[in-house]
Image (cartoon, rainbow, N blue to C red; front, side, top):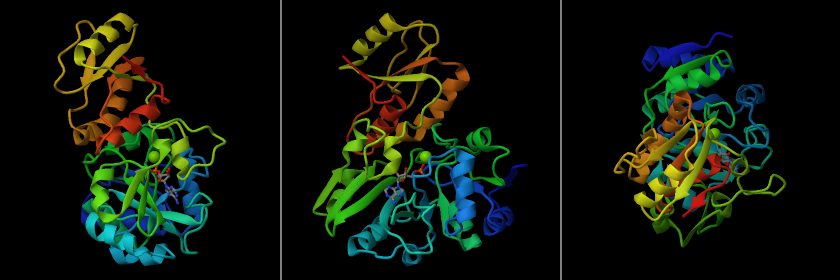
Length: 338
Ligand code: AMP
Ligand code: MG
């Protein structure tokens, strides 16, 4: 298959929309990462998404909509708290898991009776959803297990020849996938996957907001989890990633200098100095900067031929938790604490 490359003009977005209507797969930009889109209602198209990614069938896809009102086409029940959050955080990087309508097949929901729904803020994503008239099921547009793509070139690297088209909308601003939540009751928000919208951001809108334990620890493959995606090793570059929780830079640098082998790199904060003799890259100081850069750096580290990467440990509060979670999963939850 020849993968077509589209620019984000109205004419080329219309061509991409036409392909989606015909049941084809189109990768497109969102503010979080690039998505691999298909008509969420078509079993054959959604199956093709799983095949193109090599994604396990029990890992559900998120359905993307362009207007808040479309939530009623996808969700069988919409509690008041969901509407409240939609009015505050949509369009934006928040996915809400709700009971699904029959028009969403179980292939899309990974066999679950619920479905994750999101209204992205990226203008190209919304234009594509509108032009196609389809709710678009879209996981991240990487091969399963690879870092999520934040540029059209990353998508090309993983998906060229496997999908009908790639729509280029430049580099994604957020850089990590959406915050995924479900509701345990009418006033409790359960965070299934951390993202830029944090526990602290959600706190004013419910009496309780809590983070699923799967975000902090490795879940055994046979254990049932609230969010199937959280049990898979994920986001990993080819290089071994080893986060190091050090009290300060000097302790980090000392540890790395003692343990460096051939192919060792460091992933540092912007404010850190160099460590003599050890090549490094930087991924930002704040959680938002680190989220924006993390997957990009993972791909650059592979291109540079890194074999082992010592990473300065991010914080675990606010949006930083999304970075911590992606990093720890890339590391298989192995880290060094000094
Ligand atoms: P991705 O498409 O790669 O961003 O992954 C989407 C993730 O959202 C999945 O791996 C799940 O963790 C989560 N998710 C989507 N739909 C549901 C659902 N119905 N129930 C629980 N988690 C979901
Ligand atoms: Mg993904």
